[in-house]
Image (cartoon, rainbow, N blue to C red; front, top):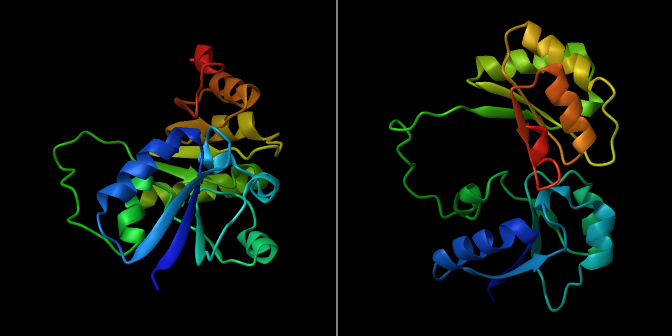
Length: 202
């Protein structure tokens, strides 16, 4: 019997995820997409998943967005089904599912590589500087400070200024208008996860 996979996502990514999975053609697994009712998939919390997700029938695995911040072990125990994180980017999902294709030719494109420090609010400025140095040595062009939902980041402005002082190009990724504003005033080069409410900040 084919493995049955359930993919959790949000409003913005649902259509793209459906196109990608449909484009795989015949697969060795059956799949279903569940929109848990948030705009940005990565911002779903453990509580939201527990409240809004209902699994019907035999499910073998539930695939979460790669940037999901919650505890997948808690979800696995709660639902009695293995929960796993998928890749950070939807485009990498075929490879995650064993359908890796020919690598794209990126040599014709002018690119900037953003490297996100996903747990930035949990780190000291010194630890952020050390992480940024490692990421830059690995090829990152931009150091992205990833803010966490409902998690204070009191060192955000200091971290941005410290990174800029050392010559790093810095971005701040947050769904909070206050954090994006702090990042902008501290000198961040890029603001990510803007929406209709935070777009005026740029």
